[in-house]
Length: 356
Image (cartoon, rainbow, N blue to C red; front, top):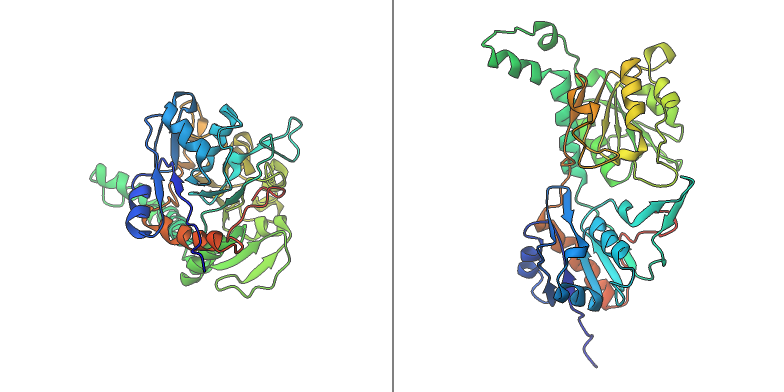
């Protein structure tokens, strides 16, 4: 019986130590590690100039059958030269979100894929981001509710409870409701973490389901119902044709106390384009929401001109709530690699029609 061929995996990533972890932990997989000064980055931010790639890098990419990289890197490569990845059969993303590989159509309705339409398979980096993003969300909720920033300010001024109106008036989390918009792996992890503190959790998704997941008290397919129920709202929604701009000004207006809501604190750890910057600012000004804690934005990095930086009720975080850890990549990738070699269906395959 002939031994199955184990194809070489090309690694071209801006994430430090990803290649080292793969080589160290997947000793039976052949790798081609590409290092090029045109690609750099930190955290969730990629700095890439495809026009500056060396000839040897272009050649290596053109020969790649299996590629591990960031979606924004692959998208930039294809936008610069659509034939760059001519032999690619499978791309393993190092991110959960793959929206850079989709572009908005001219009329703003629907996804239009990069052209020509990719003939290769794309898999998401999934199953790792739930716990760290849940940690970030609960930390931010507690930080806001207990006014840690005010306490730090008091300390810098050597004032004992100088901000007493803030630091002494807080609510128990067990008295509050968290609405989670988007209840995939990450959303369910957030719900589970919130339930540990006794928070009631309302989960929103477009598919009807029973509240059988740990931490979720109620599911709804009515986004307005979820918006109105929450003292805190966290969006984990992906960027798709259906979700871009879904959090409209009229929808957020329904969150105000005057309209039956609770004027909640809004957190976004999904994608920035589910709500426009102007919509958030207007909603804050009118009191529809009381604060915004944002880890994702329409445009990243956030421009220095953005009003968010100086807004007293906005917290800006540089897309770091759930960063890819180099040590996680081998575990996710190795199982799919064995499936690929043996002709079995891959896990976490992206649907080119749905956009996720």
